[in-house]
Amino acid sequence: MPIKYQFKEANNSDGPVFVLIHGMGSASNAWKPLLPELESFGSTLLLDLPGHGGNPLDPEIEMDPASLALAIAKLLKQFELPPVHLIGNSLGGWIALELAAAQPDLIATVTGLAPAGLWLTPFLHRVPGSDLSKRMAKVSSGIAPTALKSLAAKRLGFSRITPKWEEMDYQTLLDAVTAMSVSDGYYPAWDATLNRRFDSIISNQISTSIVFGDSDYVLPARTCQERSLAPAHAKWIVLEKVGHAPMWDEPNKVTKIITETAGVVK
Image (tube, rainbow, N blue to C red; front, side, top):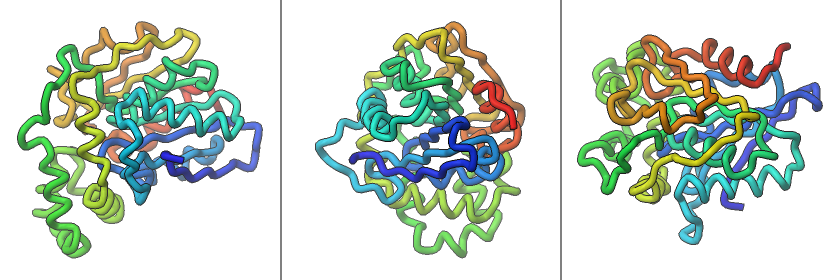
């Protein structure tokens, strides 16, 4: 199975199932800030993409978003779940959108947190310097547990990701550095997005929310947040003082958006 997973079933087995898809170079533990509250609403299925989160990279697996979406669809069919509520960040958001477009019978709702793929002109090559996080994580992974206790290291590693880098939880940042340093799937996933964008059609029966932070410097509004590529019925939300990982910066607000999109209450 190319997708590694962790399934936590809620006490109410008839409740909603939330499927969480991390971004490129990340891992399923990136969702920790959301889980305490989200799990009070329903079951959670945390995924690790190939070459991420300790999941081996299979060279036979296609790493483009549409192919990864189909791999996740196969997993969902094995679980025989009712239509699920997808939550994806960055690359995971793009995968979630592709999955909803390709397999609408499996999906109830989609919440894309800073989803990639919403650019009019696809990237034709890796943008020089934009893999700084990957290179830094690989070089510094051995000293990260100590270095991340200093503001200088936090600023260097995370000021581009979150405007709240100074107050971020230490373990969240350490998890992120560790995940990035061992993500063998980082460059294959990146290369598989080249010359592509999201332009599939999602049924208006699938409630969809697109969430960006006003301080997202990874996928900036000027070039990477094209509303015309999002489903016409999607709710477009911009959160203040939030960066590329909204679930870190505003976990309570993000949980509220997810549950409102899903139409679930406690």
